[in-house]
Image (cartoon, rainbow over all chains, first blue to last red; front, side, top):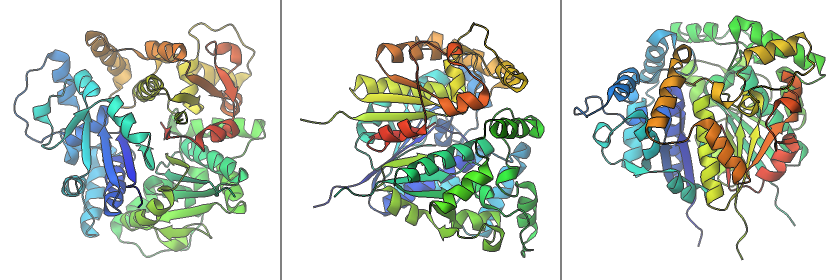
Length: 159
Length: 159
Length: 159
């Protein structure tokens, strides 16, 4: 009997294109019956933010971070050719034209495929993000949980 | 009898320095008898563009991407200290001074060592890149092929 | 008897936040009894620079690189929201507020945990960095040494 293979992706980046790559690989691996985890840390947490979160109690620095960081997957910029927001519009246009999936659709598919979406509690603390601001069905964990998964992982990537 | 080891690199970045790192690791691994694959996706595809490709039929968005993205390995910018193109010039100068290899030379060496250079067909579609615009002897595949290689890989990296 | 697990991180980036992520994962893995190596290459070498190095003989290009690149872990910028140096100040403020560890503290902890900090000799040559400019107890090696470690590694990451 073969052991289940696993894919463990750290999503550090808050760029639309890099998050797309992470979710495309993750969804592909899940389709291949891998157990898949995406560990969202630092700017990668922005992909999990709700568009209209309930008001959360924040201190001044936390309010600044919350305001400056993009709120949710649809608002992320590009790592390249962002051009003040025109780049993301162009990418979304070609995605629609090719009947490919946008980042919010890829995240929804990941949740349907039971991919484990983890939010890094340490960086949530640093950036002042609260659980009620993130999508439902997200798991909360730290680097220890990541390592426990990754040390026996087949495909480990840092994106 | 030992099994052949494999190195599978996803080159997402279109930066000269990151592509250099990818190709240096890949060439090193090939010298160590690894089976090596570089899977070029998103901006990483630019490293495979020909300098003077035959005219390809493109719609307007595709023409914009084609024009704005660097055409080939020699034209890539730096991830850091790009300084409007002065950074790449400085890097190439020190490469020459130290008799190190430029990115186009590293790519040539990779082809001589039978490293498998893959172009991601999904992102080629999105960015409007055609096969005739890319280097000869490139393989065309998608995320499924990547995963089939990487799930048994020894060194898997996302660059 | 179980074999010792290993974590091999390539730190290519010279960004404060990415270096933090690398060192947090490394320190976590060391706490889990992994053998851990961080291979510093390209801009990642800046994290190992001394604040006040002895004068080193450099040619003009090397002097330019030395001057433009951040001198040591505390001087690195952010990959995101750097805002001319205000971002790093904000991050350090929240780190202090949460009694988390700054990058220099994480590096010190890595050294106490016997994590192998490697400086890539090839990129030291290219950027004109000399051994006397880097922290004590750093190991000097090239891509061959990295591959020898990573080909049997459990957690291999490129950051």
